[in-house]
Length: 127
Image (cartoon, rainbow, N blue to C red; front, top):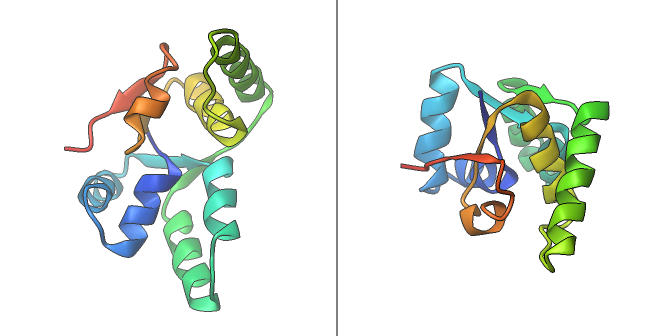
């Protein structure tokens, strides 16, 4: 299961690589999912009704993974572990990592350096 982070979906919406091509291939293969956190981030960032519509069309083509109890536990554990090491990925990214970990997925993101700190989180190459 491939789970798209917000940054690669923004690339897709803008028609920009490296995210566009990888997201397109994963959508065409029927294997792309995203999270409720990314859904929130994309919709909150919409600057016009047209942009809102494009985001909603994209989200309708994806399976949206929820922030459920297991994901919240994984996200909290991730945040605590990173903070103990003096690192942080922020609340939204901790929750995204938690959802991906809870579902056993792999995260597709441009922000590899950021998410590589979550040692148990599998990442997908953009290429």
